[in-house]
Image 1 (cartoon, helix red, strand yellow):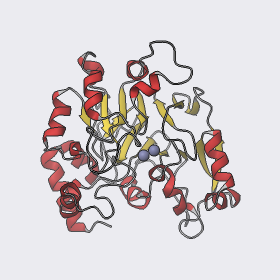
Image 2 (spheres, rainbow, N blue to C red):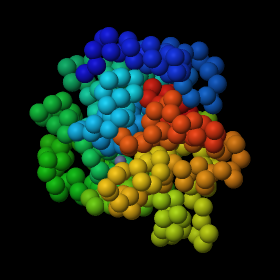
Image 3 (cartoon, rainbow, N blue to C red):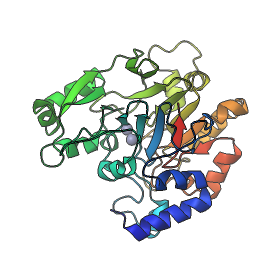
Image 4 (cartoon, rainbow, N blue to C red):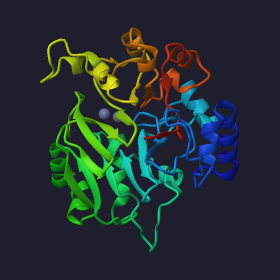
Length: 349
Ligand SMILES: [Zn+2]
Ligand SMILES: [Zn+2]
């Protein structure tokens, strides 16, 4: 847990980088002018419509990562402002105080602290109030569902948290301990996602899952489109190469799926796990395919600037040089008209 001084240092450090992010993090109960432009990330949380708060931006192992003494991890250990929690989002609806978590990470406890006061209208009472009005999980890799373990009787003892997963992921949770205990004890209430079918959270707020290729050992993998009253945000933290998606089952001939997705959304938080080939010494990166950021930069280069501006890379591995906002890799991303996602950013929907 971060101490008060460290937290202050973090806020001060961030205020140099991006004042809006720091302001958002420092404010427990967000107070924002309702007229904030809906298109700018990092604004204070809106009060009149749903928004997404970024709770984590690292690959499943976080930054710094366990046992790693490479310079990026050492720097993140020395300077809390350079830490990154595991990729996760909080969707908030300040109109009625509800909120939903996207991916339930091993950093859940710290992320819940960051989620305090979001949305400002949230009403909680009793000794163990509902932490969320629902969970949406992309897949069964540890960074994306490992935090579920905190909802069991040894820790929070949650009650019937609506949890949306694919049918295969639901079966995995039902049939394998320790997750099966969460289901049997009704800590989780499983709901099965159907690809392309909106889950309506409000008349003007819905979540739609779409299937993507990934290393599907225990579950299949989805990304989510979060459709708000004015804007749509895409969350796609884990995928094999863009070309693998284009060539996957059901794709039309000549498909350019990520471009099609960008065309129908306003913000896209995309897999930026690795910056480039050779990033992990002594390990073949063919076993762990992701679109390298360098490949995404090249692929998106022909797109109009407005399309590129929608892209924010997240799920950054601890080896990824773009995790350092002052570094050359992050500059390359910015120069290409794209962004690296930062924690504490708010996207109005
Ligand atoms: Zn992951
Ligand atoms: Zn994964």
